Amino acid sequence: MTPAEFVERLDAENQTRLAGLAPDATLVPEVKGALNVPNLLKVALKNEIEATEIAARWLVATDDVGVKLALARQVGDEAKHYRLIADRLRTLGFDPDTIDPLAAGYGPLFTYLDGLKSTVERVAAGQFTREAIAVVKNRQFIEFCERAGDRETATLYRDVIEPDERHHHALGRALLLRLATTESQQAAATAAARRTLELADELQKKALATAGIHHAPGC
Ligand SMILES: [Fe+2]
Ligand SMILES: [Fe+2]
Image (tube, rainbow, N blue to C red; front, top):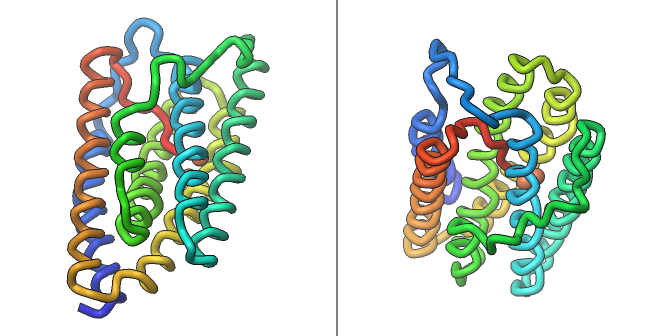
Protein backbone atom coordinates (compact mmCIF):
# COMPACT_ATOMS: atom_id res chain seq x y z
CA MET A 1 0.00 0.00 0.00
CA THR A 2 1.13 3.55 -0.57
CA PRO A 3 1.36 5.64 2.61
CA ALA A 4 -1.74 7.56 1.50
CA GLU A 5 -3.75 4.36 1.03
CA PHE A 6 -2.48 3.06 4.34
CA VAL A 7 -3.44 6.19 6.28
CA GLU A 8 -6.92 6.21 4.74
CA ARG A 9 -7.40 2.56 5.67
CA LEU A 10 -6.15 3.07 9.23
CA ASP A 11 -8.38 6.12 9.65
CA ALA A 12 -11.42 4.16 8.45
CA GLU A 13 -10.61 1.29 10.83
CA ASN A 14 -10.14 3.72 13.72
CA GLN A 15 -13.40 5.51 13.00
CA THR A 16 -15.29 2.20 12.95
CA ARG A 17 -13.81 1.20 16.29
CA LEU A 18 -14.34 4.69 17.73
CA ALA A 19 -18.05 4.39 17.03
CA GLY A 20 -18.00 1.79 19.83
CA LEU A 21 -16.72 4.44 22.23
CA ALA A 22 -19.54 6.81 21.36
CA PRO A 23 -22.69 6.13 23.36
CA ASP A 24 -25.95 5.73 21.52
CA ALA A 25 -27.13 9.24 20.67
CA THR A 26 -30.60 8.45 21.94
CA LEU A 27 -29.31 7.16 25.26
CA VAL A 28 -29.56 9.77 27.96
CA PRO A 29 -26.59 8.98 30.19
CA GLU A 30 -27.26 8.26 33.80
CA VAL A 31 -25.49 10.61 36.11
CA LYS A 32 -24.79 8.92 39.40
CA GLY A 33 -23.39 10.26 42.65
CA ALA A 34 -20.45 12.54 42.19
CA LEU A 35 -20.39 12.43 38.40
CA ASN A 36 -20.17 16.13 37.73
CA VAL A 37 -18.13 18.60 35.71
CA PRO A 38 -15.47 19.28 38.39
CA ASN A 39 -14.80 15.59 38.96
CA LEU A 40 -14.53 14.96 35.22
CA LEU A 41 -12.15 17.93 34.93
CA LYS A 42 -9.96 16.28 37.55
CA VAL A 43 -9.81 13.18 35.32
CA ALA A 44 -8.93 15.53 32.45
CA LEU A 45 -5.95 16.92 34.41
CA LYS A 46 -4.46 13.45 34.56
CA ASN A 47 -5.00 12.89 30.84
CA GLU A 48 -3.42 16.25 29.98
CA ILE A 49 -0.34 15.82 32.16
CA GLU A 50 0.20 12.33 30.76
CA ALA A 51 -0.20 13.63 27.20
CA THR A 52 2.28 16.42 27.97
CA GLU A 53 4.84 14.03 29.36
CA ILE A 54 4.62 11.31 26.72
CA ALA A 55 5.08 13.89 23.96
CA ALA A 56 8.07 15.35 25.84
CA ARG A 57 9.68 11.92 26.25
CA TRP A 58 9.26 11.18 22.55
CA LEU A 59 10.57 14.62 21.58
CA VAL A 60 13.84 13.81 23.32
CA ALA A 61 13.96 10.26 21.94
CA THR A 62 13.79 11.06 18.21
CA ASP A 63 16.43 12.41 15.84
CA ASP A 64 13.82 13.47 13.26
CA VAL A 65 13.53 17.26 13.41
CA GLY A 66 10.03 17.29 11.90
CA VAL A 67 8.83 14.86 14.56
CA LYS A 68 10.59 16.85 17.30
CA LEU A 69 8.82 20.04 16.24
CA ALA A 70 5.42 18.37 16.01
CA LEU A 71 5.88 16.93 19.50
CA ALA A 72 7.14 20.25 20.84
CA ARG A 73 3.96 21.94 19.69
CA GLN A 74 1.94 19.17 21.32
CA VAL A 75 3.83 19.45 24.62
CA GLY A 76 2.98 23.15 24.73
CA ASP A 77 -0.67 22.57 23.83
CA GLU A 78 -1.24 19.81 26.38
CA ALA A 79 0.43 21.88 29.12
CA LYS A 80 -1.80 24.80 28.13
CA HIS A 81 -4.86 22.53 28.38
CA TYR A 82 -3.76 21.50 31.86
CA ARG A 83 -3.49 25.15 32.94
CA LEU A 84 -6.85 26.12 31.39
CA ILE A 85 -8.59 23.19 33.09
CA ALA A 86 -6.89 24.04 36.41
CA ASP A 87 -8.07 27.65 36.04
CA ARG A 88 -11.59 26.43 35.31
CA LEU A 89 -11.54 24.20 38.40
CA ARG A 90 -10.44 27.19 40.50
CA THR A 91 -13.37 29.24 39.17
CA LEU A 92 -15.68 26.35 40.08
CA GLY A 93 -14.37 26.47 43.65
CA PHE A 94 -11.70 23.75 43.63
CA ASP A 95 -8.09 24.56 44.36
CA PRO A 96 -6.11 22.79 41.62
CA ASP A 97 -2.90 23.13 43.62
CA THR A 98 -4.24 20.55 46.06
CA ILE A 99 -4.68 18.01 43.24
CA ASP A 100 -1.79 15.74 42.23
CA PRO A 101 -3.07 13.99 39.11
CA LEU A 102 -0.16 11.53 39.21
CA ALA A 103 -0.56 10.64 42.89
CA ALA A 104 -1.79 7.17 41.93
CA GLY A 105 0.91 6.77 39.26
CA TYR A 106 0.68 6.72 35.49
CA GLY A 107 -2.20 4.99 33.77
CA PRO A 108 -2.03 1.86 31.60
CA LEU A 109 -2.31 3.81 28.32
CA PHE A 110 0.65 6.00 29.29
CA THR A 111 2.65 2.91 30.24
CA TYR A 112 1.83 1.26 26.91
CA LEU A 113 2.74 4.36 24.89
CA ASP A 114 5.95 4.82 26.86
CA GLY A 115 7.01 1.30 25.87
CA LEU A 116 6.70 1.92 22.11
CA LYS A 117 10.11 2.03 20.49
CA SER A 118 9.68 3.23 16.91
CA THR A 119 8.57 6.65 15.75
CA VAL A 120 6.00 5.22 13.34
CA GLU A 121 4.31 3.29 16.17
CA ARG A 122 4.41 6.31 18.48
CA VAL A 123 2.88 8.59 15.88
CA ALA A 124 0.20 6.02 14.95
CA ALA A 125 -0.72 5.41 18.61
CA GLY A 126 -0.05 8.71 20.34
CA GLN A 127 -1.09 11.28 17.77
CA PHE A 128 -3.15 9.68 15.02
CA THR A 129 -5.24 7.37 17.24
CA ARG A 130 -5.16 8.77 20.76
CA GLU A 131 -6.06 12.24 19.50
CA ALA A 132 -8.91 10.83 17.42
CA ILE A 133 -10.19 9.24 20.63
CA ALA A 134 -9.82 12.60 22.39
CA VAL A 135 -11.97 14.31 19.77
CA VAL A 136 -14.79 11.79 20.31
CA LYS A 137 -14.53 11.94 24.10
CA ASN A 138 -14.41 15.72 24.14
CA ARG A 139 -17.51 15.91 21.98
CA GLN A 140 -19.30 13.70 24.53
CA PHE A 141 -17.95 15.82 27.39
CA ILE A 142 -19.14 19.05 25.74
CA GLU A 143 -22.65 17.56 25.52
CA PHE A 144 -22.41 16.51 29.16
CA CYS A 145 -21.39 20.05 30.21
CA GLU A 146 -24.28 21.54 28.28
CA ARG A 147 -26.78 19.19 29.89
CA ALA A 148 -25.28 20.13 33.25
CA GLY A 149 -25.76 23.81 32.38
CA ASP A 150 -22.01 24.55 32.41
CA ARG A 151 -21.65 26.59 29.25
CA GLU A 152 -18.25 28.00 30.13
CA THR A 153 -16.60 24.61 30.37
CA ALA A 154 -18.36 23.54 27.16
CA THR A 155 -17.06 26.67 25.41
CA LEU A 156 -13.51 26.11 26.69
CA TYR A 157 -13.55 22.63 25.19
CA ARG A 158 -15.27 23.57 21.96
CA ASP A 159 -13.29 26.71 21.15
CA VAL A 160 -9.83 26.02 22.55
CA ILE A 161 -9.08 22.44 23.54
CA GLU A 162 -10.91 20.53 20.83
CA PRO A 163 -9.30 22.43 17.89
CA ASP A 164 -5.86 21.68 19.37
CA GLU A 165 -6.67 17.97 19.68
CA ARG A 166 -7.79 17.93 16.05
CA HIS A 167 -4.51 19.53 15.13
CA HIS A 168 -2.58 16.84 17.02
CA HIS A 169 -4.48 14.17 15.09
CA ALA A 170 -3.66 16.00 11.84
CA LEU A 171 0.01 16.10 12.82
CA GLY A 172 -0.15 12.34 13.30
CA ARG A 173 -1.64 11.97 9.83
CA ALA A 174 1.07 14.12 8.22
CA LEU A 175 3.85 12.22 9.99
CA LEU A 176 2.37 8.81 9.13
CA LEU A 177 2.20 9.81 5.47
CA ARG A 178 5.94 10.39 5.62
CA LEU A 179 6.93 7.50 7.91
CA ALA A 180 4.62 4.55 7.15
CA THR A 181 6.25 3.68 3.85
CA THR A 182 7.06 -0.04 4.17
CA GLU A 183 4.89 -3.05 4.84
CA SER A 184 6.55 -3.68 8.21
CA GLN A 185 6.16 -0.04 9.29
CA GLN A 186 2.50 -0.13 8.29
CA ALA A 187 1.95 -3.37 10.22
CA ALA A 188 3.62 -1.94 13.33
CA ALA A 189 1.57 1.25 13.07
CA THR A 190 -1.67 -0.71 12.69
CA ALA A 191 -0.90 -2.89 15.72
CA ALA A 192 -0.08 0.16 17.86
CA ALA A 193 -3.28 1.93 16.80
CA ARG A 194 -5.38 -1.15 17.58
CA ARG A 195 -3.83 -1.62 21.01
CA THR A 196 -4.39 2.06 21.82
CA LEU A 197 -8.07 1.74 20.96
CA GLU A 198 -8.36 -1.49 22.97
CA LEU A 199 -6.80 0.18 26.00
CA ALA A 200 -9.07 3.21 25.66
CA ASP A 201 -12.08 0.89 25.43
CA GLU A 202 -10.95 -1.11 28.48
CA LEU A 203 -10.33 2.07 30.44
CA GLN A 204 -13.74 3.45 29.52
CA LYS A 205 -15.47 0.22 30.56
CA LYS A 206 -13.54 0.22 33.83
CA ALA A 207 -14.39 3.86 34.50
CA LEU A 208 -18.02 3.14 33.74
CA ALA A 209 -18.10 0.10 36.02
CA THR A 210 -16.30 1.69 38.95
CA ALA A 211 -17.34 5.34 38.82
CA GLY A 212 -20.18 5.62 36.31
CA ILE A 213 -17.95 7.79 34.13
CA HIS A 214 -18.69 7.78 30.42
CA HIS A 215 -17.70 11.27 29.50
CA ALA A 216 -14.20 11.83 30.82
CA PRO A 217 -12.52 14.28 28.46
CA GLY A 218 -9.59 13.14 26.37
CA CYS A 219 -6.44 14.99 25.57
FE1 LIG B 1 -3.79 16.40 22.34
FE1 LIG C 1 -4.96 18.11 25.48
